[in-house]
Image 1 (cartoon, rainbow, N blue to C red):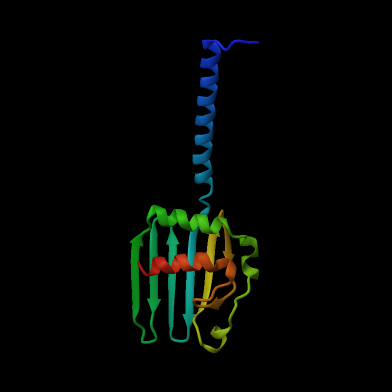
Image 2 (cartoon, one colour):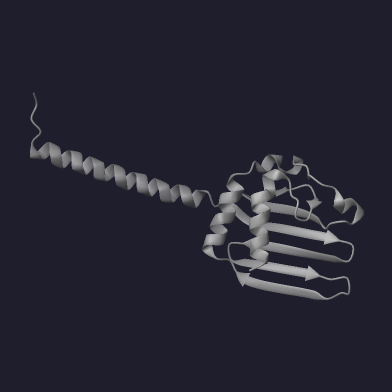
Length: 154
């Protein structure tokens, strides 16, 4: 039977410490590489009014235009936790299929709801949803839509 002496103990401890350091550095690298979104835009339009929400790593910009010609603009800084959550939500989407996801309702076709489109710019590519009724996105976009709406209302 082999005895474990102090050199073996020190070697084992050093190996464990090295593994912990490597695992932690891999975690932080993975978090950084997941941030692929450069900009996300949500446009809502109907006869008479429109609004645009544009979010990037630095700012949240909201533009709205009313039937009477009145325009409103609101600009604020993007909080790091908001940007991280947007990237998390987008990472769960198959963006190559995004343009194929069908809307559950059709009220926008008779001006019963504003037509809404979400556009995601990521890794140098642009992905755009089909139009859907405001408040009723395709199931795959529901969480992202709800989160973007929460940013508008802050």
